[in-house]
Image 1 (cartoon, helix red, strand yellow):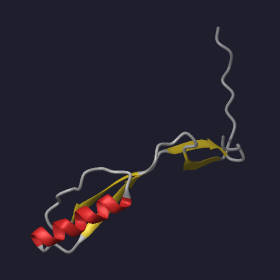
Image 2 (cartoon, helix red, strand yellow; image 1 turned 90 degrees about the vertical axis):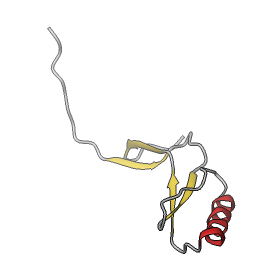
Image 3 (cartoon, one colour; image 1 turned 60 degrees about the vertical axis):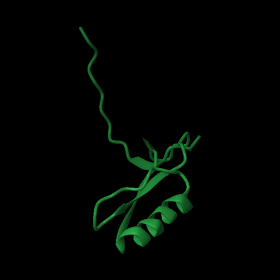
Length: 79
């Protein structure tokens, strides 16, 4: 026989993972959907957009950033 399960209410928070890698980003042209290579260097992504603009004349871009997150009980200290 298994013991009964006890559930209790707990508040949780979402924030940066303390063991995270640097954020990864890339830029996507909103006019032709071509993406830049993924990088951790913002300047590389910006340069790609400027070069793409020079080649195509496209003016609108979207920056996409990926950051590792961690869920923990509210009040738990970060490591």
